[in-house]
Length: 207
Image (cartoon, rainbow, N blue to C red):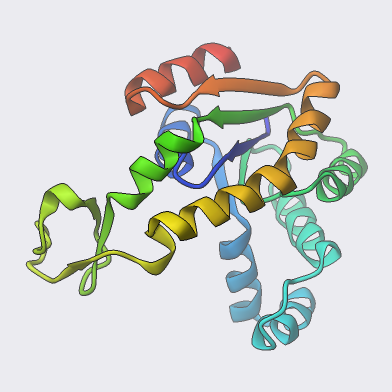
């Protein structure tokens, strides 16, 4: 079984991805990790990707799709959880075409649905440690509970920045959600509940 995890920033994708990997033994495929690994290995696609990354440009779809294809060819029998890709309908169609060539498919798009106001409330409370990278909340105060470093709020976790990110997400992702809904692969999950409750819904939907 192969799935893609969808949801707005702050919807809880990272938490649910960890739980899904532990429960179903998915291979977690982050496109960012794929790109960085390809660049480190110096593969042909990695070299092409590096030219765009060094220039601060988005890596073209065909390169990302190529990296996904290479990964699936190495271990076609595994189940994959795609995170961060596809982001648009064009990417989704390209991904389906690539998977079809390999004799496999994307089974479900798991969509974590959280109200925008709830997302703003969640993310505006998020704090990070400057020393160890721990991610916590304003409830942790100004000192990291793990290493004692200074906790701070990232610029993109401030309210106006979050609202702008949500506008971009809604604009880009609604057609993608409609695409997966139209071909019967969309699983809408209420992401507003506690993580364990959300995961119970996800498990039930996948089974």
